[in-house]
Amino acid sequence: MSDSIYVHAIAAPILQNLTTSCVNNQGQIQVQASGTNLEYSINGTAFQSSNTLSTIPGVSFQLAIREQNSNCVVHYSGLV
Image (cartoon, rainbow, N blue to C red; front, top):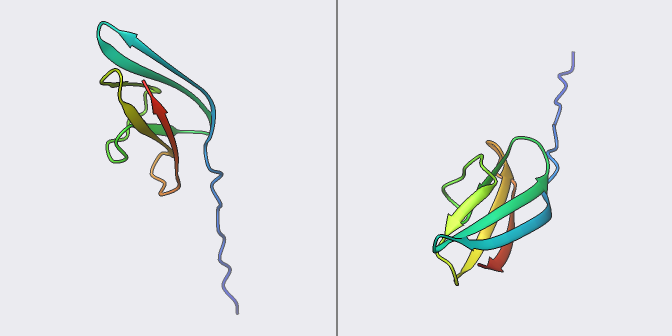
């Protein structure tokens, strides 16, 4: 008798479009990425399901995108 092990590989999210703006003195980052159940973060720890993130205008940021509950994180850098 043999046991089978199945591994489900998760494709890394792919950034398709990134828009930055300043609204009411608040920096905004609008993200469009391919994948399912994606989460977004600008600090690498606090992930959210919304693809619109807020930050201080005029600063650089490190955007992280992952599939929900995954350790596969893709990083992008930018400036608002």
